[in-house]
Length: 545
Image (cartoon, rainbow, N blue to C red; front, top):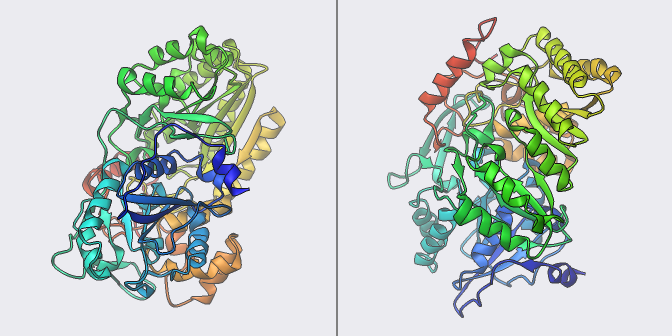
């Protein structure tokens, strides 16, 4: 079974034969193969490692794996989804490696992690990793391997101290966290010795050649898809948005030297093309890219595009997509309220949303999916009424177009201006209210689970004390009830659920990730926060509730 899965891969790179002294390395994805192999980040890191002759890399998923080395020196995890931490702990156990870094000795491999979840806030998971790579893998990965080679035969402690000197490499065990009280906020985060940097800076790749699939397979969750990264980050900077703030600055792939060669290469092995990025249609040469894909030689190509900016939905775009087997488009609108869009810095008006729907229909698309959000800081009940009114207007403007409103609850994310706000306790009621009002209009309303938003907020604002909680919930299951049960069991050893999830935090307090520097300084985030709150009807209380 395993060999047939790997045998059906079409590789778009040439692996190197490792030399005799190559470092035995396991690169794991803490989920099933079909999910992991669909992650562009995972594909890229694996291919980068497989093209080095000083590393011998084996892949490991929860359901299958390649032949694994008997004594790996490094084990890495790429993490795209918070709740996959359970699988990390299970995989470590299956490899007979202690799940806590403090219980490992010189006989154990170095365990590293990377990916969006850990770059945002690694603290809840920090005790399980020896090393965390913060930021873009392009430069970071090579620097990590080279630094490891220099201390390959040294003791574990010497290795970790040397790795901590490399920009973007975070070694959690070399930092000590103190708390105001056992169940209070963070008091200080300090390196345990003077030679360890006080702040670890996230690394940013600034080239204009972005990533593209390194493997195409029918066993992927998106069957036989070839993915091309068109842009990285997003210039819009919505105040809650991790995808924008954490990955700044906005970078675009060069059409001539990156996008066209990549697409040509991929379309030789498949006819399914995915254009990725938080704001694909804001590429300065997007129209030229569309013209290129519209050539008759690509008539059999099936094209899918990640979320697009509302005011870039032209009839031409809709037509091209409809001809390339795409039936619907996704746009993020967040709310129908003008005031809320000012608060979050969403530069968008209702008439542009209505126009986008009309253009989508005129171009031959059959559906339009809008993304909304409830519980945005500053939201009042009348803002929800404006969202319902907007959806009614969109439906009127494009009769026959299948309309879907996907709706999430606001979750605070590290390194964004809204990291200080908690989750609104009214959010669940507000999702139910929208459901009740939109259903009779024939609009397909798809709310994201409120309970999942609570767990997400807990992990996105968590500190190291959560590691004990995560070990407990692993045995209890991943429902919100399990987390509440674990909090009950650990009462008095850490703050309660409310502190992490619902409380508005003081802008004066030390955040769990204060020693990890994102693209923007705290002073800039505070300025953006002040801009946002200036549009509030009531003045917000930014202090612990």
